[in-house]
Amino acid sequence: MARDIVSKAQDLRLYYILPNNIYVKAVDGVNIEIPRGGFLGLVGESGSGKTTLAEGLLYLIDPPMIKISGKIFYIRKREGSSTEYETIDLETLPQHRLDQLRGVELSLIPQYAMDALNPTMKIGSFIKDVARYHGRDVDEILNRALERFKLLGLPSDILNRYPHELSGGMRQRTVVGISTLLNPKFLVADEPVSNLDVVQQHIVIDFLTELVEKKIVETLLMVTHDLHLILEKSRYLLLMYGGHIVETGSKEEVWSEPLHPYTKMFLESIPPVGSRIEEKRIRGIPGNPPDLRYPPPGCRFHPRCPFAMDICRRKEPPEIEVRPGRKVKCWLFVDRKV
Image (cartoon, rainbow, N blue to C red; front, side):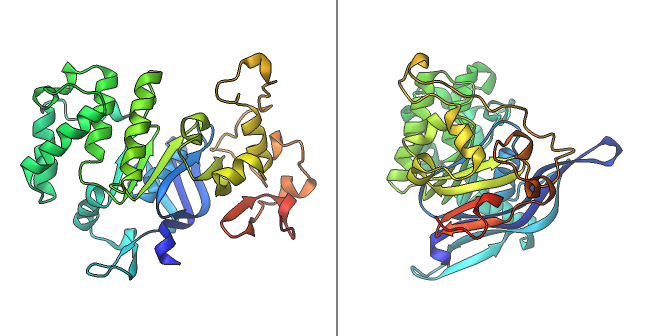
């Protein structure tokens, strides 16, 4: 039902154009529904297409990225109603409506957050511009910024500083705070703690978790290659490999009963939290991720999969719903319910 979903994509193909008309098939035929509410995780190895999909869900599609096919929808409560929902095809919105929607209802913490600030503007001036653009009370937003910056461990005088006066970690936490100032309904956080030390990572994760728990942010989709970062907090996981979503399900289901061979091997490749290396034999995944300029035929994972069959090498597997809310893209589960 619409009220259970905040975003969805249908047959989404997002490619990058390289010289000589070579395409990088970063997102290649993805069909997903993002559940509404709580802390969700989009997980996969570097280069799997996570960032491209994250940006695509907010219709942040700029060259060299292009949309080859597909639909991207945002589902929200109909204005003036507490029970009815409307589905918005983001591609059909005029640019000014899309820009207004972003920040207020949709927001992104970009992967390279340290580079997202205007180097010629003080942090306070930058925030004032954001507030004015979206028709918000400037003083209210500035006060909210100070409150959130404090939670993120930032100094009280940060509004009067230029980005170059901040350390890399401070700039990154500043962007995290700014991305939440208008209390977006759907917040996509793309590797928001990369390049932060462990203490700062926990500060940011706890900050975002608190916004979700207090329903200031309705739905948070955290994009990461590090499952440990979100394992405790998340309720639902999407596993991505080679431009495809290969498995989805609740955290408990994915962790205790992984279905796709990639998911199983990915989980086996990371040590349990707090364990010593010698307490568990860590198994890496043999082989290399696919080159998305020239992906293999059939299943993208078949060159590394110990269970690969002949059909896996020839035909792309369908998406199998093994039970409500639990999907896997694998030939092993055709005509099978678990």
